[in-house]
Image (tube, rainbow over all chains, first blue to last red; front, side, top):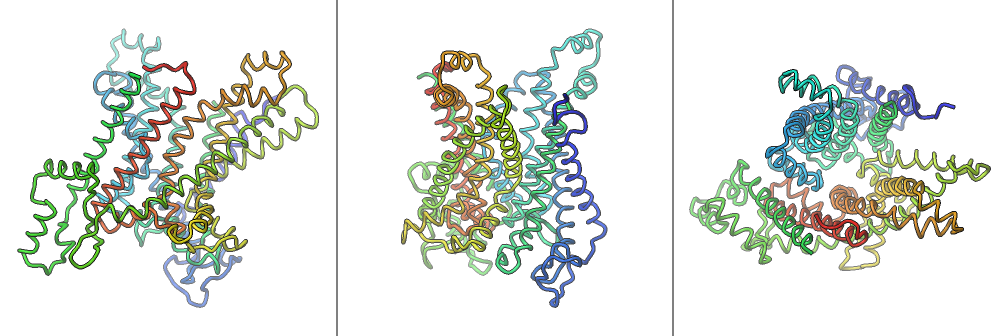
Length: 269
Length: 333
């Protein structure tokens, strides 16, 4: 009997793909088109409960919450992707060099990443934000910096594992250049492990970004964001609970989707 | 003993580096502190006087030295934003003093929840999975299988909920729908300590629930690994009861990695309380940190960062030592 939960199209993978796909699609569409204007206010439709016209209801200004969630999703997903892209690339570079060559640089980089890893990441983000100020660009910079150590670690340990493999030794004997060994011979072989940490990093980025905008130190209006919507909605929990539930459940949907997706990929291997 | 000494030196070194980093980070910021305190209308003489008072004319190294010796002697500096009255500046120590207990109690109540729920839950869960995958089959195995899968789904979903949204859900479900507490009705600990603790239950739950999911998952996996060890079979074959094998043998060994995990959780509780204090309107140091960042009150930010780092590093240090006490096999290297 085939064990359930393994194989290419296992149920984690399928559920994750569906949830993530839907969220990314809505986010991308939200950049170009939303069912209603996200800024136009309408006193007549204040706090309309979810209905066929307004899937998630309307907020305190009569704006369609579904449209605003779509835009917020776009912001959150684009920021998180950029964060993972930046910190992932830096992580690959640093991890490759330190893992393959070792030596003093490795020692220094590892001490720093150890120190940063033991530190609650929110604190580090807060320091960077308070130095740089808030706003979309600074959120990306600060989260990008904070996430580098986790990528360095995983890439480094993979490079250490692979650097003494026979095929690498052989390549070295044949006189293959160092850069070519690093990025052509080793790098492609770490991607299966690296992808999982990218997924986890992406999830953490989503949580961190929405947390920061909830605290008011993330992206600033007019940029839409799910965290900001939540903090606005908190005052109307009694009269319009859907206002808070919509952005909150959207965050849960995305994060859960991504963790199922990465679990599915992990089980494929 | 040598090991502890070495660890202690690392601890102090890390703190020193963090203090330098925390101090230097706020030296590169553009904008003049004096103008932001006095406003743009002040006379140049008054500005110069304040600059001298705050020691802003000294080079950074000297100022760091003044700052850190002050901190070590309990003088935490003065806030740029808050003032006691017209002529006196607000000492940071006083500002933090009455907010600290709020955060510490919040962390303590959260930790109690986490330990009290996740350990029994993890053990129970491991027992269920063991029954489900055991060879005995039957009714118990089937029920075990369903519950095992259900717990897996629930904990996975719980871990996807960000703490601020969980706080809002707790406020909505327990506060507004069930009416168990009044949202925003914070009770000061100076006035009514029992009421304060009761109010803390709800923010603490918001911090604890995802951590309970993580810890019980972790303990379950740790116990399942132990259950397949040889000594378990030996114990069963000697006729030891299942209960005794589970609690006396397996749990003790499975707790080892969990202790380290809980140490990490404490660091995350501290971080989580920064957000959750905001959700529940608790006047703790997390809320002070956020508002000080927004108002660019750097003396307060520096001290809070140093303080939170100290707590986190110290907890790691304790866990490290505790780990060696529980398992003497790990000797100091």
